[in-house]
Image 1 (cartoon, rainbow, N blue to C red):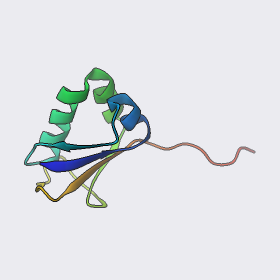
Image 2: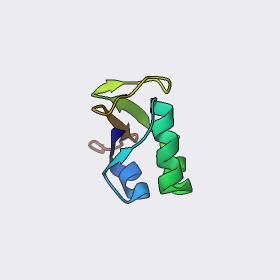
Image 3: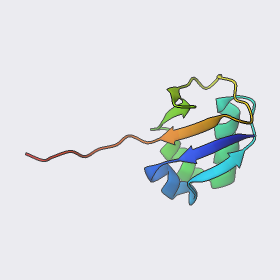
Image 4: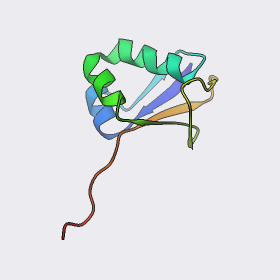
Length: 81
């Protein structure tokens, strides 16, 4: 089971920032997370980048028990002009 870390709007949609989620691949972990957290989380997920242990990851990337899968929504901000 991988450690799932959720940030910003993904955290808000799930109602949690960190969880342990089963799955052999990134896709498995994200599918389990969508089942657990519902349609609102699934909708946010479509705009997110996924990282495993600090590196961008493909959906078919394998994950182990000691891996961290991070869900990072797009960030806006900066200084207005």
